[in-house]
Each structure stands twice: as structure tokens, then as C-alpha cells.
Length: 317
Image (cartoon, rainbow, N blue to C red; front, side, top):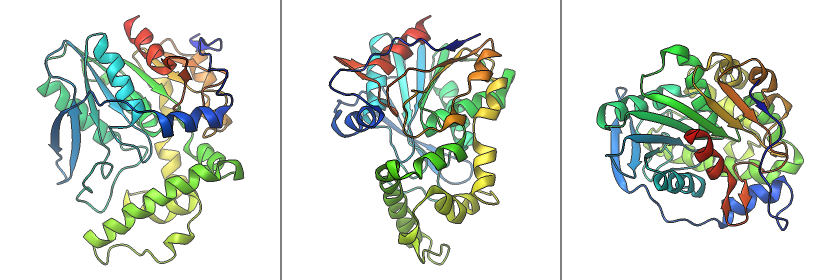
């Protein structure tokens, strides 16, 4: 029932196509951060997560999770934070392990299925913030993590979790990896791998002798990178095992709270398996909206960003 094929999103006439709608916001959007209260959350395994709050006294709280090689000061995170603060929310944005100004302590870092870190953030928020309700918002990799967390918990979610919204989610990680490996997406792949290589070089200095970086510059795909680094560093057999166990699509049927997923039909990062239409048609709580355009974590419109209006609309219903 909750499959939404007629979307209200309309792109600016001067910004057509999925690539333009993806690249323009990533390169040119500037926004003053609204999360300024910093905190470091120490984890049981000896690592840490860096958090930032917009405030800590309002009755509603939203927790925002960024995408691959993103961070809490990204334009789409702070733009969403500003939209939510405007309607009475406090906002908590967080950096995945290794995505802040300081490298994380352990040899491992973050990955698409690391819901234990999201759970730690939520648990901390419940204990330290007076909000009566908490909403979750995730983008791309952070959206996959959010939907996976909701499905894993099912009806056993923490009591304050009320609603959730996710944008541009690679619901099938293998399918998304294949799509990003195409020639048309070489620009994105090179950018991601360049950033990931730098992080591995920093880790190699902090943990000498623990990593073999021979041939690192020759890695050209997520298949190669995840096979060699992501999977073994995080307890997976190989890239396919990592993708299979971490993809959120298999967890969507167990989601028990009102949840909206928005994936644009022209998203250059997403293959056909990243569009869970059947799951929405068979769910009473999972809503899936497919705008014809929007790109990846884009959705620019004249005067602002439709993704923020849409999230506010859904959370306020």
C-alpha cells in the first residue's frame, strides 16, 4: 500500500539529470552549521564517536546519519538540521568512526552495516536528552544503516523512537557497487577510493605492521577494496559476504514504525535492486517514494532543497 510513485519533487529547469542534481549540491551548497555543542562518546570497545548537538532541551530530537566518506558538517546534514530546528526539534548529528577531524583508535573503522554504533548513539541520546520522542534520518550509507537498524530491532525498538526518513539508500550493496563501477560513474568511484586510501595510509602509521598496503593505488572498485580491507577488518569473509549481510533491503519487512524511503529514479549510484517496491506494497509502515529525478542525496529545488521539506512533512504528519 505505501508505494508512492507520484512525487511532488520538481527540479529546477536549469539543473536537469541525475549527475547534475548530485554534483551541484555536493560542490556548491554552503550552510552555516547549526549543530555546535560537541561531545565525544566513548565506546565499550575502546573507540569513540564524535557527536554534535543543536541543543539539549526540546521535547523532540532527530538523529542524523551521513553517507559514505561524509561527515556531520556536510551540507545535506546541516541543511536538514536547520529545517528541523526551525520546527521545534533538537538535532544530534554524528560522525562514523574515522570520519571526523581525528582518526578513530582501532584498526577497524566504519561500514554500511555497523548498526551497533547507531545503537550506541541512540542509547546515549535516550539517557542524556529529555526528548519524549526521537526520529531517525539517514542519507545513503547512513540510510542503509538506519533501515537495517530498524529492521533488526523490529518491534523491540527503544521506546522513544517514533518515525524515520531515509534518502538515496543503496538497499542492495552489491547492486550499488556494480552501478558505481560503470564507466559513467568513474568520477564518483575515484573520489571515494581516493579518500579511503588516505584513511588507510593514516591507519597504517597508527598501527604499523597490521595492514598490507602493497598495490593500494591499483584498487579501482569497491569489490577490490571491500575484499581486501572492509571485509577482513570487520569480520566478513569477503566483499560479497559483507554486502549480503549488511544490505538493508532484507530487513525492511520487519520495520515496525512509520518510515519513509526516498530514492530518485535517476540516482546514478543505485541499480534496480535498490528500489524495494514489493516491500512497500506489502507493508503498513514502510513508505517508498520514487521521484523521477533528484540524483543522489540531491533534490535541489528553486529556493532550497525538497528533501528537507519532504522530511518535515512526513515527520509532522
